[in-house]
Amino acid sequence: QVQLVESGGGLVQAGGSLRLSCAASGYIFSINDMGWYRQAPEKQRELVAAVTRGGTTEYADSVKGRFSISRDGAKNTVHLQMNSLKPEDTAVYYCHMRVLNWQEAELDYWGQGTQVTVSS
Image: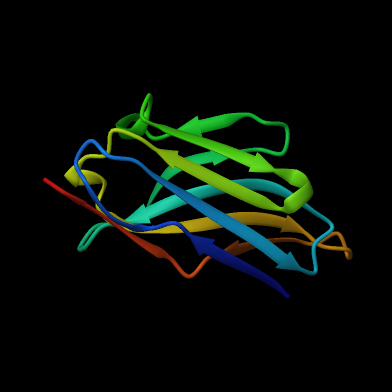
């Protein structure tokens, strides 16, 4: 079993910054993809940013130039630095990791979600 624990959400004014972190623990051999998704009320969950084990990153067009994703492989941790926040960034943010366990099975895990609210 693998657990993902998120931290760093909260309330911030437009133009401000927040840093989200997500740490994985448990039955882990290695972690392939790490990423952040978000879901606003009455909207579908969408990819915000992702990073592969090799360091290749991907961003939603709406956050390019404002958000930055990074990973610490030794600590099984992924971070999302969010700058120049806008009210439309308001959502519940979910951490995602694609984990390879010791039995060579690749499984997807999700964090519990952390609320980010940007006031205008």
